[in-house]
Image (cartoon, rainbow, N blue to C red):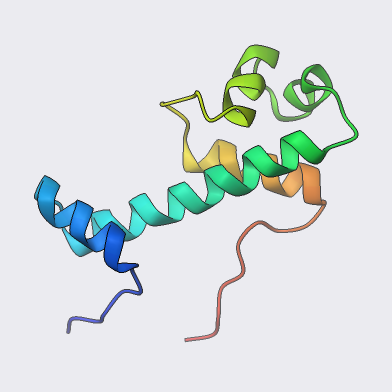
Length: 97
């Protein structure tokens, strides 16, 4: 049983160009949204990059790179930790099936 994933046209096209599946495209888009949200939260936070890094267990330089969209290898788990820490609430809400 195949379900349609909600993926933007631009992401779907990029995934097709790279030979990726719809699931890979969905993950790519999710990660992009989490990354952008994390970067914005870091920039608007009252905490220093050092304080944020200490709270989530990473380096200050990594937090700075994420804030400036310069970190290429960041896990979805770290992005969720950042959002949850800086917003004080869950980063992703799941709808009932």
